[in-house]
Length: 194
View 1 (spheres, rainbow, N blue to C red):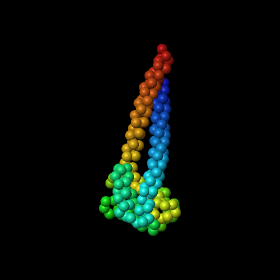
View 2: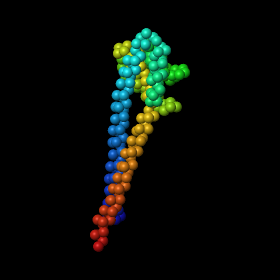
View 3: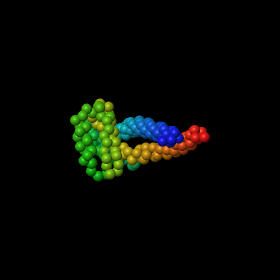
């Protein structure tokens, strides 16, 4: 194998490795940024919803709370919202029809847990996409809990778009580096034959 080919392969390998490292680090940092941003948004959202429905929940005004929840889910990012009462049972929800079975099973699971530690989220895959469920106590120290399902479709689209926007320039720079490596390899190799 000629020296120019070896040099070109070496530079090509370095460009490929740098491209992969760049893509992996950008993807990790993008995911972390999106997760942190979504968590902050969900924290503000759950606090706002809690403040808006807590009085009607205390006075067991189901229809007023349900109307508020249905208005909240008009935003396509928020898939559903439901509230458990002070005994851990379903109080009301934002669904037009019946409460979904998979969420009812999750609610039963939450009854057995320590309600003060419920900041966890669950992940569901439905026909409308992946949904992350976040929950927070309506009143700190009480068992009444607010559950918010956030559809990940928009976030995944943003993630894919950003990844593509980073991928193309990185590939173009990598190809440009490869062409420069081929050119420089031939220029370096030429004086050895003369």
